[in-house]
Image (tube, rainbow, N blue to C red; front, side):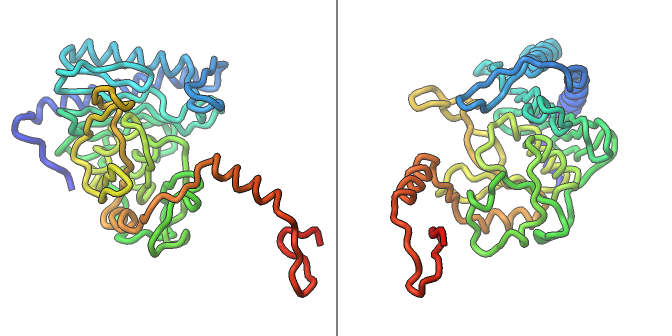
Length: 326
């Protein structure tokens, strides 16, 4: 079910924005394909060799920022690699120039260019380029508020099954069965699980009907800004939980939040978790999630150390116990 645009936002404006987003996603994708499977300089944005970034990421974001502002000088650009929009901008283009950098570095063609457009925080257009689309070829999956969703020029819709089914694919966080607790569903009742390494690509494939739904625990705004519009315009839902004790609600807008305590609120600091996909299947899954039960790594390490120091014991019947050498 598509959602109508507000009267103050003209359909002509949305058509222009969607067309530009699709074209720029395609062009940035072409630039990245030239760098794909070539030697790259890799840096890491966090400790432990996590959050890799390459010169290809930065070149693609620089291209997108310059191209967007050349066409829409009054708009703002929020990019994963550092672009910040002016506070007064009504339209903000949220750009992930290369979602799935680890896949890209390793030569796996499961990555995406994601361009989402917000109007006063509300997602109104999106375009996602992938080199491995549902037709086994490069594609752009795009949508605008009230205009439906398309794979290149072909309309797409979400999957139609009303219940999560093991016959369909679902995208779930890595190690989801350790990290998430469900009230009533076991692994076989959630669907055949896939984790592709690119949230933007996963959302695009949900919109195209290849994946039934997805759970995205704590994504960044640039991971999802384009995809939520695509999923909703393809007839699905995007549900948001802003905090562990908060209910799941339909995502209507992205609210600004401080990146760190004491800083001013910005879109870069947006926080939340999302379940997106066909309805009612996605709603049923969201309602079944009870809590996240991940044990912090230091606690796990401490528990393991304590266990290693405990004496090994045998069962009273003389057979070896779990920790016994037998």
